[in-house]
Length: 294
Ligand code: NDP
Image (cartoon, rainbow, N blue to C red; front, side, top):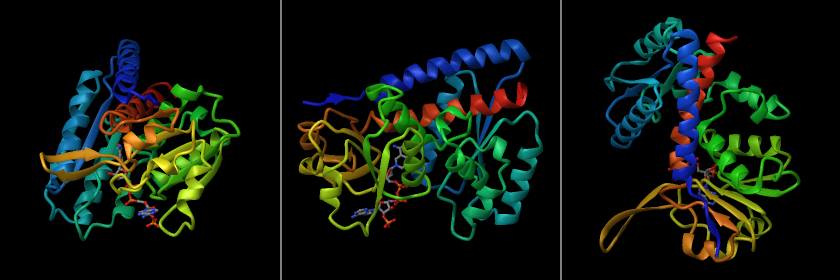
């Protein structure tokens, strides 16, 4: 039976470290790191996410503000708001909650955030730096929160050097999870396969992987017999499914089946999700520290 990787406990430990360093930064400079989360429109899931981000920020001593903007704000007005936040020296981190309403070009918006304040790590300059770095985890970069959290979970099981030479498969190639995940694994010297909806013989490819990261958004798609005996499985998926008792969250991996073969596996909920938010706070600390102690 696999070790269950407790993302809640690991995220709490990371937040405690961030809180200590935020307090130290405040003591040295008299400055409270400030994170502004822009929420455009009323997407119900986004409302929950931004509330969690602001609440968790407060708990570690970061001033986290949610700024609500109407869905019909228009691209120009949103860009003007971002320019003002970029220019405001009291703001250290800026995050635009995705998805954006129709009519706003997400790419243009992400490119308008000052890369030094881009705590999501989605700006092309930060994406480029990540891919160009030999060891992105050690380069002090603003890295995308979900893959960064996944790396921390993997390192907690395998050790910082324990990914070297391992066969890793990332299932899903989105810009926010799959692709940056592949970059970080590569930077830790894993041998990486990036799989997607056009990958042939997917189950066979998965069975070869010593590290399997699933980020597809399809409930329990990865079955137990896709998992190599002794693999470490990171399940990024968050899928709400209906069953007799109502609705519940499941991952992209059939947890009970996979746990019989894996050496270690993340649960859903309580795995990657809490790490993502903790990494956002970590990035905000990093951005503030770089501004105050260049
Ligand atoms: P996207 O929808 O952007 O990407 C999904 C990827 O999965 C695509 O690359 C797609 O391939 C691939 N895919 C879809 N169906 C199949 C299939 N049948 N076989 C193989 N590959 C397939 O999703 P995200 O990356 O944004 O998110 C993935 C999951 O992670 C979601 O459940 C999301 O809710 C969750 N998530 C969780 C976070 C957390 O904090 N825990 C944070 C972010 C996301 P193709 O490119 O070929 O279409």
